[in-house]
Amino acid sequence: MKDVAMWPRWLAALLLGLPLTIGIVGVCALAWPGRAEITALPWMLLAFPVWITAMALAFAFKSGLRAWLWLGGATLAGFGLLYGLKALGWIGVNA
Image (cartoon, rainbow, N blue to C red):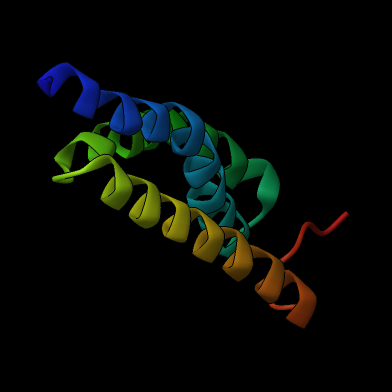
């Protein structure tokens, strides 16, 4: 019966790990001072360890529901922050 409890966490890690990573790295990359040509590559390289950490974080919760709620909430907060800061004009890509 314990194997059944791992499926919700596994699915949360699989489906929410990458969007959470994109939200975190996107906010950090756009908010980082300096030219985007210089700062983009380090942030793209940092995305892989952040992704692995986000997926591993799903297994730190006691239940699959908590993993879904926390990772889903963090993903929504990350994208909300990204779009909110872009709408305010505080961050963005300068062409």
